[in-house]
Image 1 (cartoon, rainbow, N blue to C red):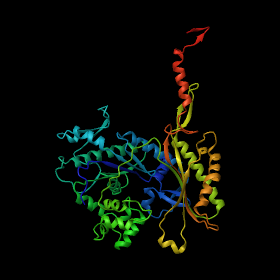
Image 2: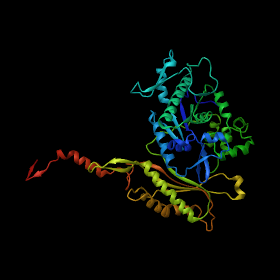
Image 3: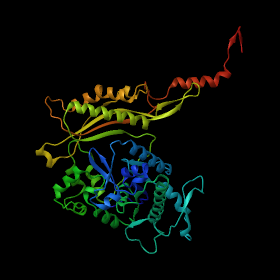
Image 4: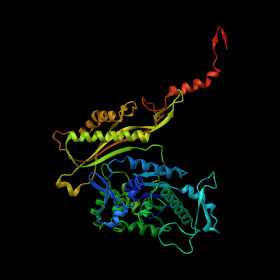
Length: 479
């Protein structure tokens, strides 16, 4: 497959090592030398590398990780640090422990600054305004691990190699800063798109990084072919199952890509149909060849959506379901206030108050039920969802979180749930509940009763400024 010509994008993919366990280790350093496990819903969700190295570990120290607040807060702090080193603001968070960075512009700025006669004593510039802001580096070699054969001498005449070389040292510097400043180690992948950088970062973990030296198409194809199809980002479980059924492969990547029945048209036919994404076949065809043209999203001061969910072994009572909806609602409202509120200066007495930076327009409820025994082998993990406009009372700051959560559950979410299965006598057996707010509108861009800018404050400030120029009529004389 012909690849896009002149591709010079450099994308970094950071993955924090054992993130959930690391959060507890940072809170309590005494845990760092112990085999540590994090429990959620009575299940061991993850553990640190000390525990993984021991296999069976009867002395495992288990901590409760049900409350996601410390993980979200830490993730936000680390993301803010990485974002502060971006020039183009193309920094995208994936979950709580992964971050993509498009560093093409900062790399391009440093390329002409290279002194090829003294690469071992190079300086990477981190600011366009301050030439002293940066770090020293040895550009005679790539930093960290490399996937792909490196010619000798290094091909400094190759623009892609030079950009990957600089990208590897920037990744090394940022990883070191994350560890020294915040105490979190990470793995990183360096490549020319999101797909390849994510795959590269998983090659050498933990506390390491890998640059995919993709100087020709053969290296990329061999690298992608070495991965199990289920490990490829962008190819979900349903697509994988359809591909396996079609070509009867052994679930290896190369079997799919080179199969004679696989083509863009064939994939579009296989994956198309009612409700399917348009162009899904071509998208998968590109991924099979290591091509990913989806850009890293620009960072925002607020998230595009806020989602709270929980899983259950079998939630089958409407009373218990309503209770869980109430808990999820409280977590959602609390998270909205953390992520979407900012402090604004008030016009009166120089005081400050909280205002919404953005407000979501849509409320979505999603559930997933456990399959019946006869359906277990063909379970596709799909969710059933329902959306409606978010009620305005959710944005009130006069009521407590618990009061708003109670009303949101009784007035909105519980009726939405019943509409997902309106038939009488339906047997509930929920495996997952997700409550989400989406379609964020920046404050001030749309009028609202509880959000946006207060225009009365603007006129009050204007009145104060113009007071000295005001004319008054006293005893028939204008002064």
